[in-house]
Image 1: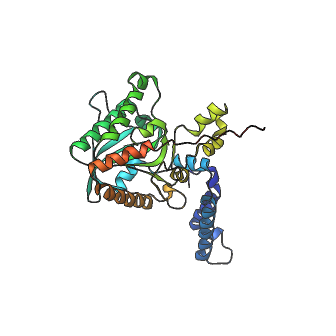
Image 2 (image 1 turned 120 degrees about the horizontal axis):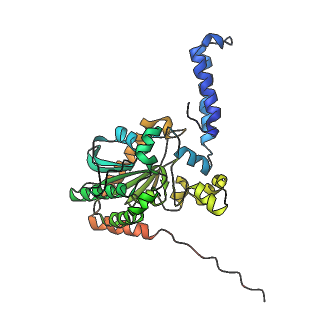
Image 3 (image 1 turned 135 degrees about the horizontal axis):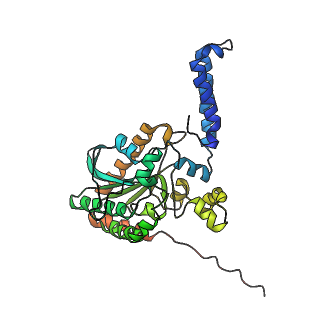
Length: 327
């Protein structure tokens, strides 16, 4: 395991020991068969993995959402979808490669697929702008969504971004306006929309393609109005308080589901999506198909009304009544 997080270290050490034993069994003979020794180590790895991943903290889940080996949008396009035909450019300014999209096939359903995409290395991350879209990225997404409406195609959005790009160029080209227009238009588009947070779901950058009839989230993804580091810097003037902020923000999949902000949590294989892309893609595909079939049973008017009611229901709160004054 070349890329492992701090809390994954015990698993990585056992895996290193197992790999070394398989390569040089003669150095590790303890009077028992090689097969028995391998089974014992593999059992220890499985037990350690269950122990660690059965009780993750919110901050540890944030770290998993950012894992260097975590599957990205293009990984799921290759494994869960077929016949993907990418469309480039917003027809206004340029082609933002932090957003990918185009026609695709989900089992027997033809769909419009849109997602944010990070890079695997420095060169690709620069090209993809670390998954943080410029205004032209959101305008490209809107162009594809309008195209989906024209051809009556369901829209599938895969979200994995720390947030929209906050640089001067993005501000000059009206990043806030681009996201705001997407929020308005996605509320009105009359085809089924399903959004899934597959990694990071950061602020308006995520919401810019996240207004949907169904909002799903992978088990170790997060969805938040601000990053834990940003929250810590504001509240405690200390970015190292990110773990404390992650707990206070209630940004994990389980917490979001309990708050009614997402419609379903999609489980990941033990150890996280990066340990088994095929299994994660299969689970994602099955849940997308389930919700797509359900949405197609609704009339256009029913879908739009339910979508509107869904987002209008967010943000309810109760004020605590002051205690009566002592007589």
